[in-house]
Length: 306
Image 1 (spheres, rainbow, N blue to C red):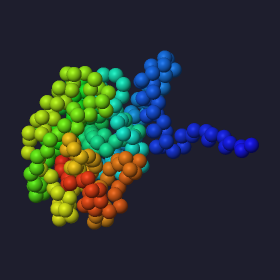
Image 2 (tube, helix red, strand yellow; image 1 turned 180 degrees about the vertical axis):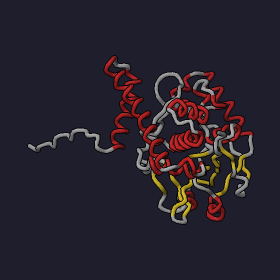
Image 3 (cartoon, rainbow, N blue to C red; image 1 turned 30 degrees about the vertical axis):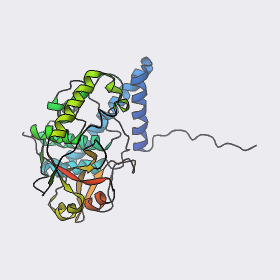
Image 4 (tube, one colour; image 1 turned 90 degrees about the vertical axis):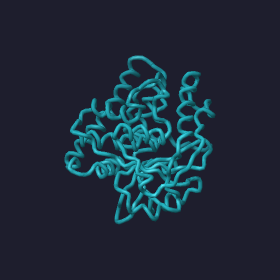
């Protein structure tokens, strides 16, 4: 008879392993509502995020990051969270739409959102956890107001437009020589079954209205073949969206510029890499290496008014 190897006990010596475990536990607890013990575990997860926030802010103060330009602050926080696990759909939790904070694991957009939020907290000298939640709400939701699932800025084109209007970023795509294009944006309304929250007809209609506006608008991107010619003009912390051939989608991936050793690299949380990492080659090489990418859009973070 073949002897089976006993299962290895779960240890939390590795920070990312502990983050991942707590993230899974948070989802299960919130979904199951298992009673007092589970509620205690849920609060442990919330405390973990708050602890990670406070740890990051203390580290930033020690590094005197507040004296540096906001783009450099964003990439510094990004470096601080290198190796954090990639987990898709981190905002898709049970219950009504509410602000989800998760510094234990990221998808591509929540990585960008959280690093931007940390930087804005530090630069505005509003460094409490309550301030972090307010900044994140402002960035993530249309006009900074949570009004059900459709109020979340699901499409990056919408995210950029709304955050330009709020004075949080500047869309510099056209300044970089971006070319105009139009595209029918319909992915969410044509894949309703993929979104638990779209079981409500009024939500579907609100999403469809947002898509209609995006589809009618003229967009700009820097085509893949032109990125190498303009990437020297990019700055640390510039937020990048990769435009795509995918039907119904505007942007398929997001990340940020990270200048390292004279090379303009791409810092991001990719599904393929399973964690936050930095591209081995340049941003232009990364984009060109994926055939479905057609180019990039660029949002430059603006410092908050103090």
